Every structure is written in structure tokens, then in C-alpha cells.
Image 1 (cartoon, rainbow, N blue to C red):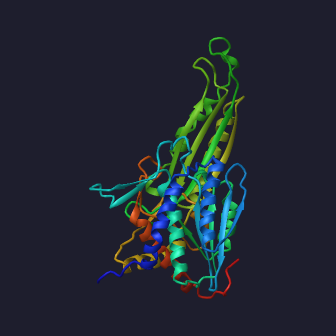
Image 2 (image 1 turned 30 degrees about the vertical axis):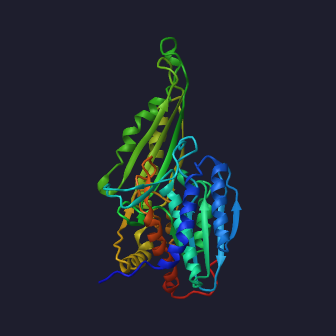
Image 3 (image 1 turned 45 degrees about the vertical axis):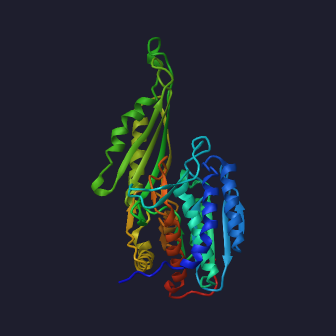
Amino acid sequence: MTAAPLPYAAALDALWPHARNVLKELVDSPSGSYEAASVDAVGDILAREWQRLGFEARRDPVAGFGDIRLMTRRMGGKGRVMILGHLDTVWPGAASAGWTYAETDGGGSGDGGTLATGPGVGDMKGGLVMALLAVEALLAEGFDAVGEIAVLLVPDEELGSPGSRARIEAEAKASDWVLVLEPARPDGGIVGARGAVGAMILRATGRTAHIAVNPEEGRSALGPLAGIVGTIEAMTDLSLGRLATVGILKAGSARQVVPDAAEMHVDLRAPDQPSAEMMAATVRRAAADAAAASPGVEITVSGGVTRPAFPAEVSAPLVALYQGIAAAAGVEVACHATRGGSDGSFGAALGVPTLDGLGPVCFDTCSRRERIILSSVKERAAFFAALIAELPGTLAHASSSPAI
């Protein structure tokens, strides 16, 4: 069977030069999560571009971070499509100094043809441009089959979206589908399921003392936390998809002083919500037992399950639709389940049909080697546009107005 051309190929070709320039502009605008002004600058670029396409743009503050951006355009069809992305990256300006957008030949590396690199090029500035390109191509062809397209861009995803989660969930509940702009896997695969993610911080407070002068007066904050590392990490069982890791354990100011403060950071991964909640409860119980066995030491626990599980059944119809679109163009697209979290988990956990990993093909995400196959921005825009065009047909019963 001869593969068909990419959907919307002519429109995408005409629009690609501008999209390529926007990609460079975004990548060359650092937007580390804690740098609110920089995140807002990226939000301004994207608001400008979506407004150019006839979208209304709104911004709402998030305490301690940049602003949430919501761009919406009402149309004449049925169903509300939520496009979900993030403005922040793991690269603050200082960390990315001297590293700017560049295009290179992939050569014989197996990465494909021309590659684009730069801070956040894959996670997720390439995906942000891909969505713009796809929707502009749809509009250029007169598309009007959905009730509304809503683009929600948050400023704090790389930190777990602590200030944005409630808004993501509210917008997802008002939508019929959630399409997430995280990058495609190195093999080009999309993401149809994610495990639950937990992040917990344990802080212990004791009493300082000089170990050679008055050691009996000291109460080590480190000892109780160190004593439960084994208990926590013993929860790891790869056969069950469970991982528990103490990534940080810090205490003390000098070798001869009993540490009066200690801090432990725990990362939890589980295949489903009940397993994740069980693991978080085990951490809390271990902390309580350690405190009870250590008079004079207080232990507090914060955090818990920060991203719920993303069940495969929520994405299954969209996975089949997307894979069919790609197959018609001669491209086989795998679907992956991953332990990594994303904002897509919030909508999926509510039962809203969600598909993730729709951005360009990316390698070595969140490293200095991060790079995308440049041509995959246009390829994935073609599939993304075709997916949106087919979504209304998946609604058995829908009104002509969006679900808001």
C-alpha cells in the first residue's frame, strides 16, 4: 500500500517558515520555572501567536510563578478540545548561558535528518510550536467542526504544577478531550498511560551539641531519618512497577557537632493510585515510628502523591485514532506507558479522554544533549491537525456548543 501524503501538507509547508522562526524565538527565551518574568515573556510570545489566529487570550497569576495563559476560540461544531502545555523548562537563564537555538545535521547518528537543539527545544517548546502550526493549518483549510479549542499553558509543570493543578483539572472537566504537548519518545512513540508519582519531604528537628563537650545533650536529627532509608527503599519492586528512592538526605554543619536539622526527599513511582497511596502511607508511618523512637526529635512530613495515575483505558480510543492517522501516511507510531509524570495525568485521572506525547520526536530530554528531529515538528503537526479534525466524530451525543 502506498502511503498518502501528510494531512494538510500544503498548508503546513506554507506556514512552516514562520513556525520555525517562532521555535527559535521561544528556545532563545529562557524560562526556568522559578524565573517568573522569563516565563511570562514566553507566555507573551505564545499569546501573541494565538491571538494572531483569532484566539482570545487570558492570563491569571500563580503565586510564586509566572502566569497561567488560556487562549480560546469558539467555533461552530461540537465538543471542546483542550490543548495542554507548559511555559517553563528545567533551564534557568544562568544554567543555559551560551546555549542557544541551533540546527545541525544528524548525520549518521541515527537521530534522523536536521536536528534542532537548545534549552527546552523538546520539553516543550517544540510541542508548543507544533500545536500552533497544526491549528493554523486547520484554520487555513476552513476547519470549524469543534465547538471550542482551548489552549492552557501553565508556568510550573516542571515542579509538579503545584499552583496550576486545580486550574488544569477545572479546564479538563469542562472539556471533551485533552491533548498534551509533551515530546514524543525517541522512537516516535506517543504516551497513552502513566504511573502515579509521589514527592515527599521529611524534615527532622533535634538539638545541637558538641560531641566532645556535651554529647549527652545532643539529639541527632539525622539518625532517625537515616534509619528509615532502608524501610522506604525496600518498597521498590520492579516486578510490580513500584519504585521508592531517597534522592536527598542532608544534615549537619560540622563533623564534630550533633546535627539539629535534617531533611530527606523521597521519590515514589507506582503503576496505579492505590499502590501510590500505600507507598506514601508507608513513608508517613516510618517517619512517625522514627520520631516515637527518638525522644527530643520532631519529624514533619509534607507532600504525597503529586500526580495521579493515567490509566490506559482513558486514552485507548484516541491512541487508535492517532495511530490510524499516522499509518495512513506510512508512519508506524508506538504507544508507551511511562513512569514519568505530566500534567496530562490530571485530566486522565478524571476520566477525560487524554492523549500525551504528541510533540516532536525528542532525544535526551532535560539534558544538554536535548534535541528534536526538526522535520518531526511538521509531521506531528499534520497528525495533530488530523486528530483534532476527527475528534467530533467520536462524540456519540454532543451539542453544538463546547462543554463549558
